[in-house]
View 1 (tube, rainbow, N blue to C red):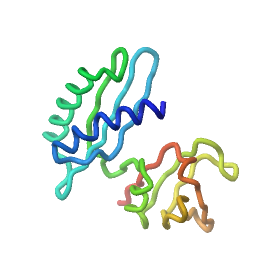
View 2: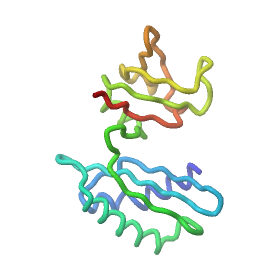
View 3: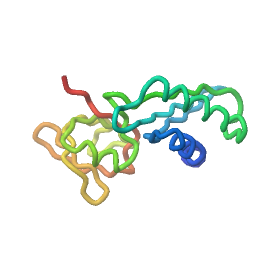
View 4: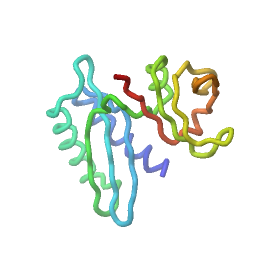
Length: 152
């Protein structure tokens, strides 16, 4: 699936950037005979508007129709990452040092797969996460899913 993810990202990123947006990340999954492609875009300085999502959706759809990287039927969703934005890259974690994050790991680390705590920093490619009185160094490559936890 990583190969497909990379292929999709390489097709989609130039389209998104040509529309003056940033490809924040994407999620691709297959369930039965249908595929789901979620594209998260960001835009500085004012954020993403519905019109931005519509433009990106139309342009990406055209590219996907021509290049045909997804066999069979698929659903395409384009949105802003939102307040609980997913963190896809190490650079995303660096932007959110000092914020609360929730992580799910691919495999258990010290007997756990789910963590939620304060993102303290990045050290040698590992996420420094404070959970209560404990501090964990979690290898980035073990992270399956990560999101910012909004504080109200």
